[in-house]
Image (spheres, rainbow, N blue to C red):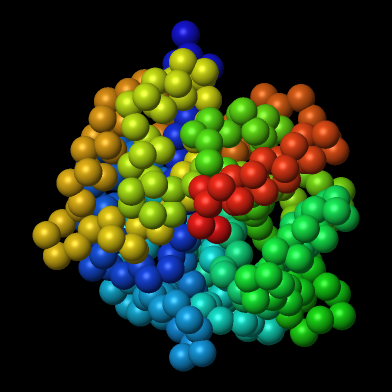
Length: 310
């Protein structure tokens, strides 16, 4: 008998980052997932793109895209938040985005993922790290790469503060991504609370799959055999808007891998539904310092090996 609802042997979901997503390039992917019975989570931008944003994509302000997302929701997929838009947002813009999300989809977003370098990102950049030496290492690496960012979604005196809105409306926020197919191996307390980040009710981790080739490799037969044998949990983090489908339809390798996955004894549900279940079986809601320390070290190791893109 499996350890997941319905006697399933393992759990699998996807958090799809909306970057560059359009009805044309992600529509075929989601229609395929619906046919296979794999329900996942798709993030959106509620407000129109800003011309200053580096990465475009359709938003809930585009009627065909809105109707597509409403159809996805009616089919059992989850719609999540990826900030209000593709560029920095002050508190009033974030409030407007959350309101538009609720108006369009009937409720606030249950899951959220920060977008790139948006200033209103919550507990992002060096603020992701609990341990001072990890913050120092991260800051040093960013300086060497000539990259820096100011993230103030949790800073109460910032014009970009929206921590209280996040705490009141969002159930789960994505944090670390790992080069690992079974998240139970690195984050068994997921979804977890961290007393240092009071504006996030619970955090979740995910598996690196942001590019087509990496995604397909992560769900190879060998990895899926292990995931199933371990009774594990996989939440893939990806960008379906980046080459997973084109004018000829869904990429054949991706379609083949997802078809093979669908034939296994997996529990294929959206991220929030999966995390709701995991909450019922964890021993503690609060992550231990030891587990979080190991996660931060593992993230650095994966990042330095070039295994992670985000």
